[in-house]
Image (cartoon, rainbow, N blue to C red; front, side):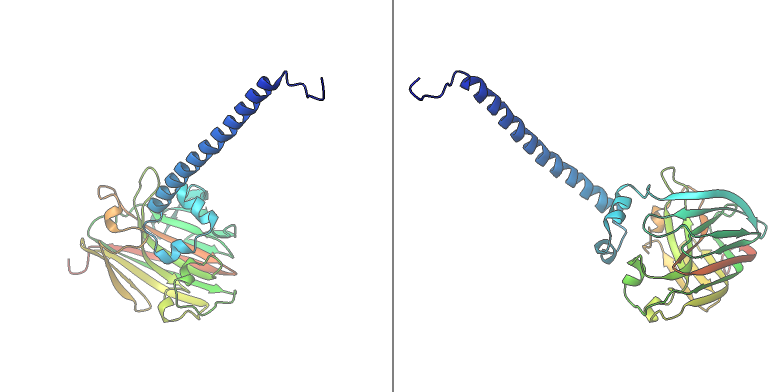
Length: 279
């Protein structure tokens, strides 16, 4: 044998090695292609789902936020969904559990509203008034709140987009009833952040009433603090008015969010429904 190593099985070994190399290359190439396709799909869905957001907010999104937007918000859930009667009107109420915020705080439902404690997100929707017409609604209520958390002075978008920023507030919206989730048009915030552009140093608030008027051309909002402004079909908040289902009835939402130590209280006393001003 003269020191020569036996090579009788070399062809078989070479074939095995070749097959293994081929499989490895195939997996690497397939993984690369799949990753590129998946990323492209992910990017397209993400851009579509966040198209309504300001660029400043997009840049501050966390991985959890991104997953939430790409999944269409389906990571959030609603607990304790039920109907109540407040001030002679029917409401649907619930507690929102949001993956972006700590939102498991206690909510006390009362005969005419709620008391929301630390880190809670009560939601309410007025069921028997159609806001998709020329109409004006005035809600007379005790709407108050307070923060025990330190409230840093802030006049930038970070006050709205930083999830750790404390606030206590009510949100007023129009919503439709799409099968795959309602479209929400934000009208006004009532709370510790509603004067954010002037500097936010307050940690408590109290309002006695607000009104929302649909003139057919614009939405006019007023409240007991003297604030008054109009939103038209081109005004973009969560969405534009044109994105709401025009053939559907629109409902008025009065939501709340206590993002920190504190509370909000809603006590509805009267709901007046009238034609628009001057009609």
